[in-house]
Image (cartoon, rainbow, N blue to C red):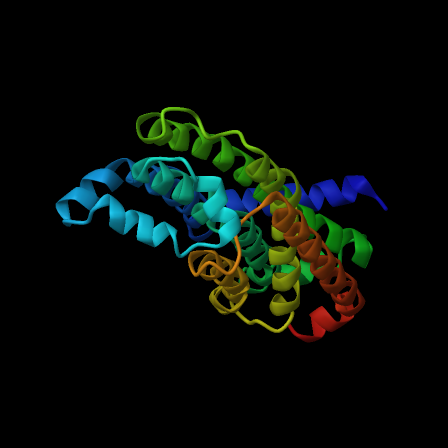
Length: 272
């Protein structure tokens, strides 16, 4: 493996990404909404409950619908504090996974399919690099930025969530073990899942928008996790988080092995 060639491919792709507003804007806006706007909205939660005429009993009834394991984590807290912990620590945990998935997904879509639209893929395919080096460079150019955005987003979320928790709970909620596992173990796997899925989609997609829209379906498992927790089927415990990361790594590895077998420049040239 010629890592200088891999590095050159990564640098070229990242330069193109930075210059593409259609790629940069989602990468910026999505973390801002999830990691700043949503946690700060919990500050108005008690006011919103009071203005709607809801009582603390209504909040307790809502929390009674969650799984027994999660209910045990919230026992002993005042209704406002329990609602804040429920939202900040547990309900927003699945949404965090959207960031590494979508960041890697959108960069990979631009890296693979964008080359076709910009008419630069053919020149790249004729460079003196192996298929493995070309694929590695393109995968890393999407995976590493997704990890960086996830880490920075988590740090930003910790600050805003702790600001909200200081008023409602009286103590900081972050860092905690569940989210630490999410950032270190699950987020890299989610990013790998997003980009390996896009790698397969981009082989047949003709435009960036086609690839991005099709690749966006990978967030459906996150939606199911969110609904499952809201309905009391599951809750984000440490063990569930570890298992989720393992499942994503296995799926990503399987997609990578399959994609590597089908990633041949002769086939890509034929599809130009």
